[in-house]
Amino acid sequence: MDTINTHFRLSYQIKDEAFQLSQAGNCHLYIAISGRAIRFAVADVERNKFVVLEDYELITVFTPLQVAEQLNLIAAQSPILQEQRWLDVRVSVSNHYFTLVPETLFDPAHQEDYLRLHSDLDLQQQVILFNRTCGLEVVNIFAIEGVVYRMAQSLFPERSVQFVHQTSSLIRSALHQPERKDGRYMYLFVERNYVTILVVDQNGLQFCNVFHYLSPEDFIYFVIFVMQEQKMNPEQETITAWGDITHDSSLFNVLKKYIRQVRFGKRPSDVGYSYKFDDMFEHRYFELYSLHFCE
Image: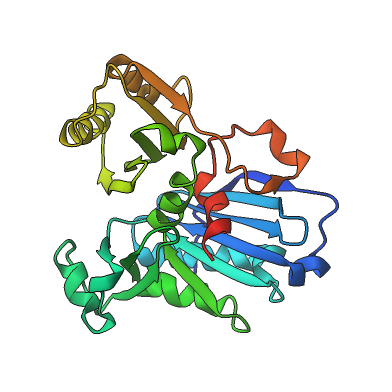
């Protein structure tokens, strides 16, 4: 690939000093790719602990080809992405090209037809994949841009790369929140210009969708709209948020204005974290941690 310009910056980096690349054969590598960021983390399987995290912000990147180019440039300077001995490599993609189909109705021969009901596809540019969502008897059918898919695969020629849609890992973690048995809850995963909204109760997943927003007003409109559709009361329900949102952000302020109870989510509790992670907000990088549970 002919790459010319660098359009990323390393915004966060964590590495436990006890971790060495020679331990890769006992570790999983998790990579989260979106149009705004490329992030990856390493989990030591023997210790069941996260030991590495790196977050690269993409700047003035507008096309899938540019995302693939930046992934290639990041890999060229990253010993983590150059390593081949990982026990498992999992890649999540964040986009709105996905649909959930009950497993009993799923026919792999018609995965394109299922997805076309909800998304405008370009099969010359996109690859359609599917994975069974852990904890639910559903199949997540999704599309990934072909250039990104091929680039991610090319980084690990000696490994079979597992691709999942970001919603699959988020659903998996949401269904294992401890309070879920007590009632109905709304969970938000916030990215720049996108928010994934999940509603779960004691019976499982009730709602999942990804919305594109351009302003705090757009953002709160989608949240309130889903609450109304799900017959949830903003005065009584608790919303839990993860992702790229802070206590002093306009998004959090508008949530607090319309929703009585808003809180930030915790990191998944079924895995450990190096002490190096202690200085981070627990609600950040939930999409990476959640990949640990997508067997």
